[in-house]
Amino acid sequence: MQNPQESIYSIPARFRSMENLHIVFWIIKDMSWCMDWKVLAIAMIVPTLLVAIFNSWRTRQIHSELAHNLAVAFWICANSTWMIMEFIKQDKTIFLGWLTGKQLSMIPFIIGSLILIRYYLIQRPTEIKLKQTTIR
View 1 (cartoon, rainbow, N blue to C red):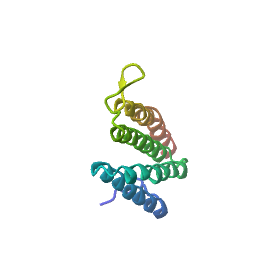
View 2 (cartoon, one colour):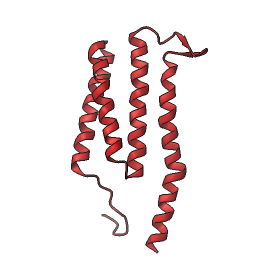
View 3 (cartoon, rainbow, N blue to C red):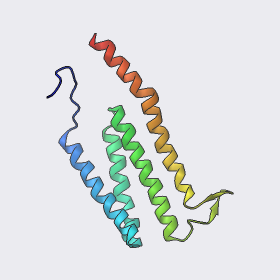
View 4 (tube, helix red, strand yellow):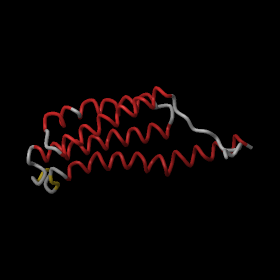
């Protein structure tokens, strides 16, 4: 049973349908990677990343959604970097003095992680504190 004091979180259905489409693109990209269908896998980066960026833009007023959607966009960049490096047989090649091609994907992974860390350590506690002061 719903607690009457608990707030309900919802997003518009049009946002949800775009998120679902995004998942379809991402699955096609990763399945193509798994099957070594290079052209389709690389082609699917574009719609997958564009929808992630679009989702970020559309939810920019909702801090939690923005942080998570940006993290997803960086995750797709990282995942795509890793995939391309494998396709072009550069995943074990050394770049930037010590990083392998595969490890280069850690850069966008780290950026996405930092966005989430900032949200959970700074933004969310501020939002909770603000919510508690306005309820009283």
